[in-house]
Length: 81
Image 1 (cartoon, helix red, strand yellow):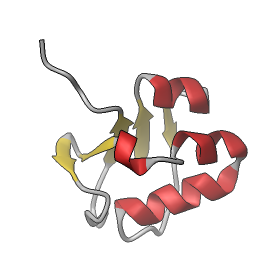
Image 2: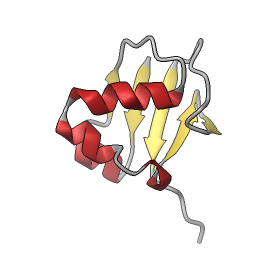
Image 3: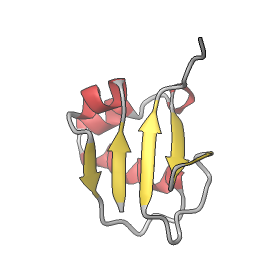
Image 4: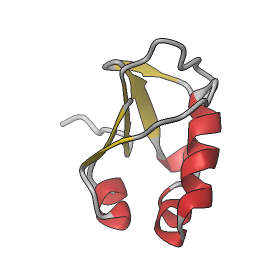
């Protein structure tokens, strides 16, 4: 699946997008796998309350299932203006 990173998440990880092979059942499981990779991932996902996630371009929660998902995006909360 494609994993996309936006704003400071992208800056901490150093990539805007990557292809990830995973057996993760939920977004939270995917985050755990990513955090175990390297310190930069661990730093980016250290505070999940500061992140939002979308699966296949639908805003969702970290307990969302990943079965059949093609894309997961991580980004900071958006502000209006």
